[in-house]
Length: 626
Image (tube, rainbow, N blue to C red; front, side, top):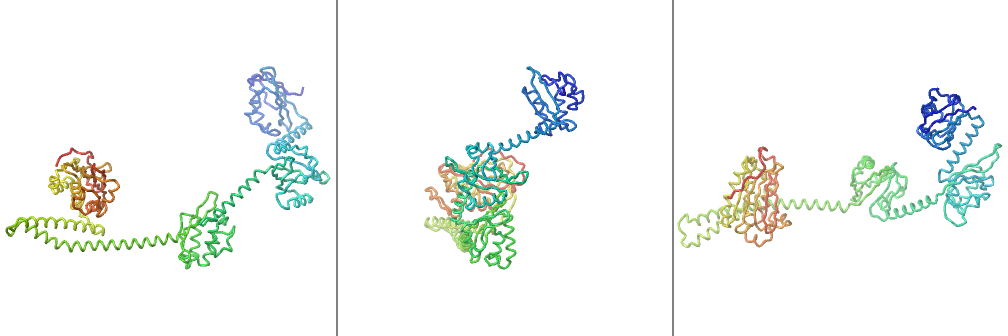
């Protein structure tokens, strides 16, 4: 027999092979030796290209996998010397396979190729959702592919012999039928003709068809062949999209905000009514397709931009740069002192959205606010000057009052007789001293607000500073039976400060603590370096405290918290405010923590750059009573 034969087992080992197989496939003899893996012969043929000529180019992995499939398999391959070879695999018994190879005659090869072509065309026709059709020279349908019935649920046979025009109930275009008839009569191809077919159950769906004429060998017209598809969902989607677009456009027209959409070529796609009203002077050229540059130039030519009157071209170029490379809102002044804020947003598809908001009122409010701020600053400067001048004028007679009342109270020029004179003189001296202290605080605050208070920095030890301050409040604390404890960390670094100002701050804080602490209370003065390397000096009392929302008021000039205990003491409310201003002049912070009926802690925090060295411990030392 002119057959190439090979018997292999279930592990692909060759049990027997004839010489014809080697000739048929032009294989090296060693590949057909008993016990060799038959996959080696298949691999040899695949590498040579035998499986790519007429078949679907299976991979070597697929071919080797087929060697273990227990079913009848058959394929044609290209053999050596341009021959066609048919190979067939048959399962034999339970474990073996018989492989048969034979040359295919040329006629058989042509038939095989034809069958393969027909099968391929059939597969393509049935693979998609569309269907193919054919109609004769009278436009009567003669054939539909199987997808027609599967897609529409209509029997193809029921349409055979019927005219295309008789089966159409409605055309998408008003003159669609006339134009389609003219195209067919001229034997021209047609594309994307949309129509609604007639159905027995009155179902509503739309079809799109394309076709081309075909002729016999003598050139006679024989009909049309083409393809159709169901586009009912597409039509419905377009209608919904159109409806949505109309609703969006109506909504945009109702907005006060001006809006326009430009494509990636800077051409206008859509604008709302507010945009047209803003550009009413050039309304005749506003239409889809006009470019952003043309709109800007048209407005500039009319002199509508306040900034573009003298340098129109420079203004146009600036607007074009802002349009191409938007980097945030831009304020533009139109003629008539109308201000708008223009913002351009670049979309992912290259389109740009332009929004414009009228900010004339906002600009006027900003102008009014700046005017009010300037007036307030002038009034504040006038107030500070008045306080400074008044304080200087008051200090001269107060010094005289304090001096003379002190002389009288001490009876330096002899006895006064009635002891009440001495008491009155001491009251006058005390009141004058109090008034003088208030005036000094006002002067200090005025100088700080005017920026005229310069610090006289020097290097000081924190312990020495506290030791100098505590004696000044000791008698008042003792009179109120208030104990003052010191809690100062050891080996604290020295600080660079204005000694007089820091002492002024601490005395104010200690005086406040004594003032607002009831009999038998306690004040703790601490000093340590915080974890950030800043010097922190704290004054903690067990006094009446404040609500958290009242702390900011207490920090303001002349700010006082309404408290029955606080009202029993004199004060202007300048102490905390002055301490805060002086602390900030040192680059530090004054922090207040307080709770009603528990107490208040005020922390004076000096920045680390004011410390002489950073080699020091941060742990607190033992407390001691002062």
